[in-house]
Image (cartoon, rainbow, N blue to C red; front, side):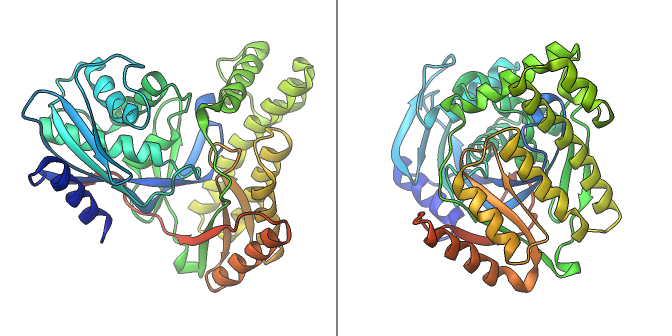
Length: 380
């Protein structure tokens, strides 16, 4: 059964009727630019073919109700405030609340969710859920919510209602990405540019490797990194670390003094430059040449930002040893996925090399697949 069919079946079983429509939003892979989003910096994600589908229709009793193929018992709620709905249902209640808080009259609705975005893998299953629900509610209510406003509403649901201090990257990718493109996003101005990302045309592929070391953003480590970045920016007298150029890195390190703040700031400052360099190479059609930037990004996350774990480091090292042009962890860290830029005909060999390296360390076996840049949220 396909994911849309599963969503329809869940809706029919839970509510005894057919949905008014289907809406979908994808997970994402961040090609490069990790933890730069909440530092007003630059990111370069692309949308995955894996997606969350929301089957939705009007609610007859003025409430909102949601079920999932993973949790078929519906969660039902009325008008709520942050914290009143908990668990996975909070992501849906958060979207309703954020739309209402932005001044929109949200239509009462019944929703059933199905998804093939891997959970807890750093591929932004939560943003896919939020974006699918947001798109469904906007269409059901005929709400005039400009596309460029939607990511911030979904982000507010996660930040304020759910309590996860994520930046704007995930929701922007899920909502605004286009097929065959990477999304170059300025997280301060929200200005975007679609960057051609033609891998197949150059005989290349992105292999995504799920480390099967799950992560969670709400566990404190993500928030601790964000606080360190804010402290470093304040110490340097800038609004955000995005405002420090690589040319001023040595001077910034001298001013910070504190070794931990130095490492955290160095990652953000250099990572922003790596995003800009990657965009320039892609504009020029030099896809292979972004490989060293991907690998340098991983080293920076490992050594300066300290957000990798042994499983993802092992996957990166094994992929590079198998001939990848570059490899890095993608996502918030402390587990999740690795991406590797490879020749298209090396996918199986690279995946096998990573699996063998895992077996030698008695890790839970990884799972791998080739990712292509898919479309953003919309009605099916």
